Image (tube, rainbow, N blue to C red; front, top):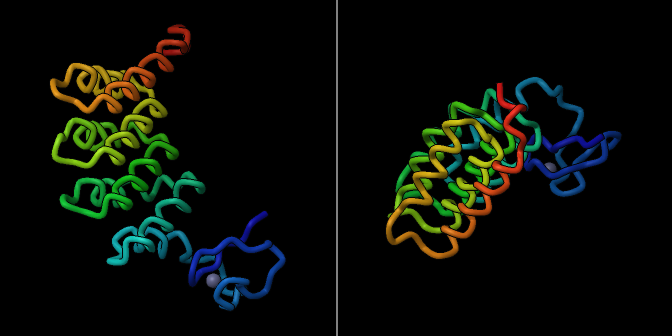
Length: 167
Ligand SMILES: [Zn+2]
């Protein structure tokens, strides 16, 4: 098991009493840990917001979805933050994230890395709405070639799922 430092979110051994990265005590009760991570989605320092998003993704923390969607929609924003937030929404697999991810994917003013992350997140979510968003992206005129390729790969990966698995 891993214990995340409440001060810097570095990974520590579960048995550790102090963070090996920053020295903070790990004996604080876990209460509020997820809440602090969710607050950090809005951290003004992009690196902090990225780490918070990554940890929330690994925790598959569904309470983070709404604040993640708020950050995802911010424009302009740090490209790294938008990318990490899209990846986290894919990891959590939240169907309610599809409209926000689709808006990012289809927005030609956004940089490519977050749009690629949105593509993969939509494939991971895999609902009918997610597939429709991928189809809309495939039909985009003037889309960058790499985006076309990643969208096509995402669509192919979804088509390999037998249709009987859909209710
Ligand atoms: Zn620490």
